[in-house]
Image (tube, rainbow, N blue to C red):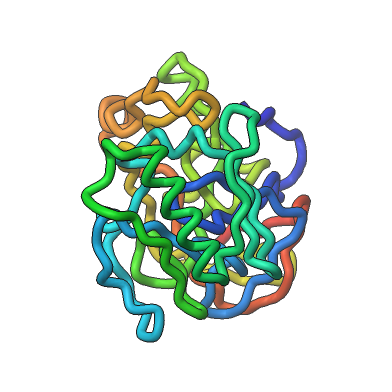
Length: 259
């Protein structure tokens, strides 16, 4: 668990997920443009046995169309490194190099698709297909947004559930520290300021079975949605925010909560 910090509200950690369903990339800073996602977040996805996504006319599809942790916990065994400039993806599994592929090339995409087909044949509805659309993000929600977690809320859930929960179960972009537990539930339709960037809190995040998966072990070892229902009467942990005014945010930046 990320330890509590005795400081005013601030960014504790920043992440993006270059390929939907695969491992996160920790960032020291992130470019935030109005109406967009964190640069490079969910830029690619793996279609599960279909070929409906049109890269020339990208549009939102529900996450069930793609390989993702909600149904495919085996994905958590893959550790990835992605270079957004070269589009080169490196995949390791259990500490061993498994694949290096340039996703901007047909050959590179085919290499990843073949690897996935061999890695998880029992989870596939057909041939997997790596997809990308210029400027598109394969978010779980239709709007372009960033996801935010209050680490004090995670700790409160841990204490009440009497079990440790890795914060990366929640696959957020921005992890905040120095707040009261659950205060983010009061932020809907309000403005949150992080450094020089302003975000509008659009909606709460309803947690799905993806949070059951331990990112360290790739096992379903805690029923987080059920814990939330039993302990709090809802399945909410975290919020989605739209970038209202842009800039660059950095780990450690001060956070000004809505009033």
